Image (cartoon, rainbow, N blue to C red; front, side, top):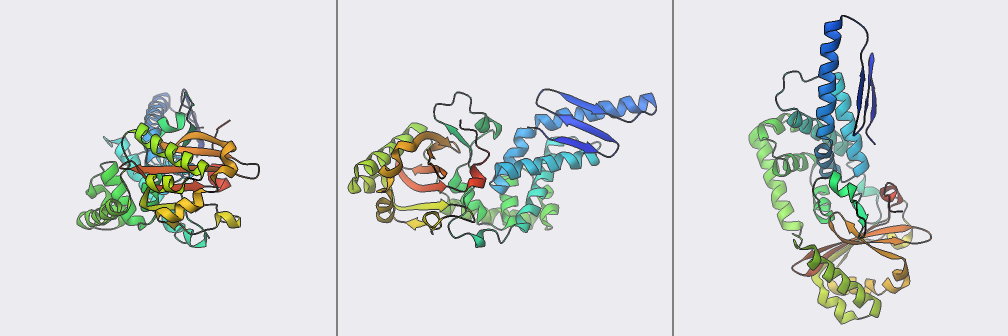
Length: 325
């Protein structure tokens, strides 16, 4: 839901359909000008909300934290009108980036406390969902494997790469945020770009090709077909599990790397096969698993017809916001 924001001496309630601005009584012309300006700001902010959430999600790997960053951007806009800026979208993009940079710096040690892997908060819809609103809100999909690599970057590298390479922000505008020169900001983005290209697999563009690989994997796992599993798994496939900071033992495990190790782990699939529903996870084939004690989301990354990454998210905090019926 859009935030309800209260500012000093005024309040603004924003929704996808309506805006209501209340301004203290004073000179009629000044009041009308102020109300008109704030109406326009509210409308423009709402128009760019999906874009700003996409920025926040790529920076933080969390829908809920992205929403917090967007709300904070609205508060800053409400408190400090940028005045004559010709590009409010660009101004807000940089503001959200700055907020996310501060958040990343504060949570630097978070991943070191996990017994297993850190994985992003997923964007999930069931495969038969006719209204994939969460996908639409993010404008376009970003794979979990890419977000995992982004999480390994320094906060300044991540911001420079995301703002410039993904959203086209000039380095001259990024430089003050990371407290470096434009040339140095360019170097940060270049370093991040090399890391992404080396470590984030480029998934197959055709969703049907991806789904066939996942279906072949599930069929082989169900039948205990070890050779069939090896055929569909990339030799360097990685299996990651994120059970959260208080994960039970079966989820508190380091990543498994290699087709044989992942194939052996997949032999446990028949135990929960009856609880599985096909899903779209961050734009790629996945599964939603409803277990009595804990639900899971599994995402697959498929490149060149083979599965290169399997990511299992079992952290209740990261699944709490999912609306899957």
